[in-house]
Length: 194
Image (tube, rainbow, N blue to C red; front, top):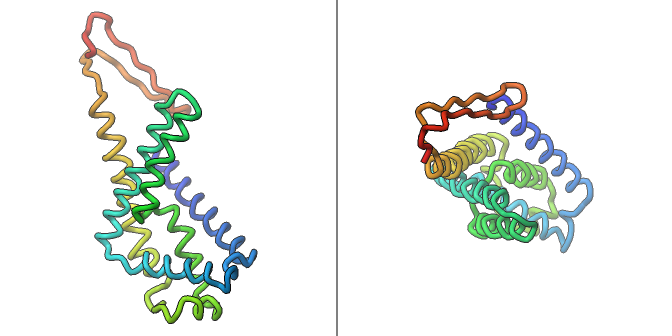
């Protein structure tokens, strides 16, 4: 599972960088007198200037809500329920300004690219970009946010829901097929699983 997670993480990073390149080439950042680019730059600067602890805690809170959205959508029986289940937690995560590693894989590299554009710097009105670089991106943001995202998803959703819904069964055998990931369980019918 760790190997799959690492592959997904790297795939998300590659996809984010591809999107950064496409957005840059499209000139989208030049809209409204480069104010769109200035906004992206200001966001990147803000994100790399958070403390390790702030980034970490915001990462926990972000992925707690993102995983809760996934959990709610899986629990819903119809499309409307799935959409509503996703919409509220994600809207809350965005509105509160929490930090998600995959989102930041896009926002901060875009800021790094735009910091070399004079029109963006002028539109940003003398913003201090001295702390915006690849090192601060990885150390001040991506590392603590990723660790926080892991804890937010694994503990605050995965573990707590497992704990809340677990069933006790001393005579049950559970096996996981390593190739397919399929879980099979067998249990003596005389054993109370409640």
